[in-house]
Image (cartoon, rainbow, N blue to C red; front, side, top):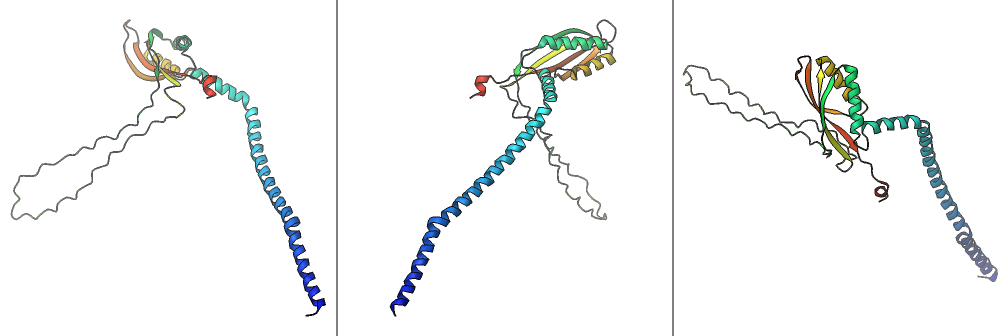
Length: 239
């Protein structure tokens, strides 16, 4: 092999090495940086899209802010953060006057921590047994096929109560309330409807009526509950 050929082979090897070195040192880092920049751009685009959705929602909420404040005020009046018994009785007296009845007595017990209602249990299945017949069949009678056994129905539990994990014994208080009203029965029913649909949330738990002691209309005893919501303090909210 002559020297010219050796020089040519050597030159080719050097050029290949230079190209490889240029790729490793110059081109590959640039490609890696470009790929990293594309990834960062995609992440930024996703962040911008998410922030835009949040901003749009905030703009919508801001436009609905007056309605939201009105709803909040209504809910706060329905379940206040303090007992507000005097205001509740004033409301009941207003309903009584509007419906022609008189509240002759009332009592408000101490509030009790809320306890979630338990789901109703399934009824116990009854197991009945039929007595065996002691009659002797006639020899000439045609045998009667035995009746097919019917499976006993499986008891099913009742509808579970609707509960919320946000309502607990620590932040919700149940206040028992009872009072007696006197008036015409129709008037008492109208008063009861007004009491259940008034500003303060009032759940009727018991109702009984009888002839009025005064001889006109009925005396109706009403039992129920009002509720108080305890909001967390600023210190507790920061924990």
